[in-house]
Image (cartoon, rainbow, N blue to C red; front, side, top):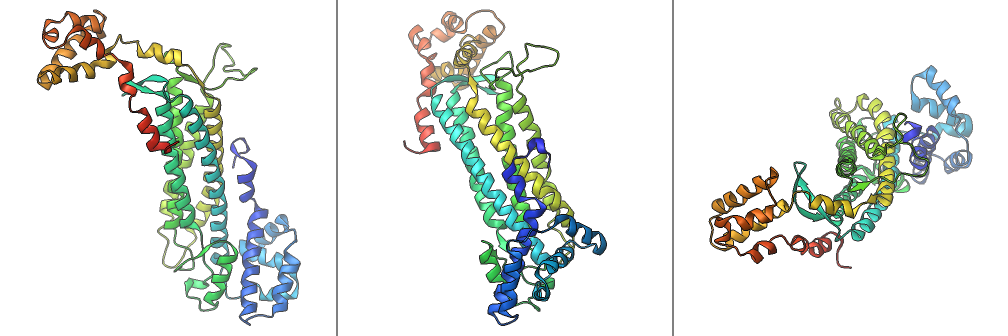
Length: 435
């Protein structure tokens, strides 16, 4: 986790202090269940809670023990015994390290998902507000980077809203997918621990019971989780790339907010660069890079190995922290995005009406002209206009082959901008529902 791209709430989930606190809760809840089943004294379970509930787990002490024993869970249990005293012999009865590690990791991923879902909600709110603000702000649509037909800036933002709404749904599903607990002992057979202990711990930690574990929780669950983060990262980059293109000097239809005192270049005082969008593009690449390691973690040897462990110690914090930061930054970017409708209109008119070429072609077909011939007639005039040989509308008016079928008013009617916007309300209802 790099402080520059880290927000405190998400970072807190991945601290050593939080991890050890969750480990303790797992062990203490397991002790409660065992006490209820008569497997350990109830006084022992009470002592574990009483002495550990408000204890400060000494990270440096645990790390010092681990340097000697070369095992993180044993190091923690040794330190816990120092806190609890003799009753600590009833801690970890029948459990294996993965029971604690995997259940804890899933608790952390669930908490991270909750923050990411909240991030998505904030972004969706910003996108919806700006989409309705520019619902009927006409702008040019582009395919292959080339002017195509008119759309609205509100529709651009509505498309992003729909995409991130799908991303939110995937986050909810990924949260559910990974929200399982395993307290099944070595190789997952419950030979040394009652399944009822697992059920108790799972409920206490807000998780579901893993139906079958092999000492480790199956990593296809985690692969789906990180794949979801990767897809959302791709959506972040898609919107960021759009803004970067729109901010180019030659386009300048929208621009990141440039605050007073902000500087864009150490060399050129005039520069206003899309630094936030570029930053988001880079962060999205990092989030997506963690998907492949998560997929490769699925194939573990037999009932367990720890090849996944080192991967998850890195990708768990880094992927969630990075996406959390990116979503928050994107929400702020959209909220303050400066939009230039006058430049949008200027760009709409840049090609002298060529963007209405399809409407002319369709008007000809409605008059009985074969589509191929209609295409040829329109393209013939469009290419002249493209080359600067005249205004598209004037060229059409002067083309006898076109005028055989279309009157001057009919040609002019095909240049109606509003015709391209007549179904905006329908699309908005599909995306946002009825107002």
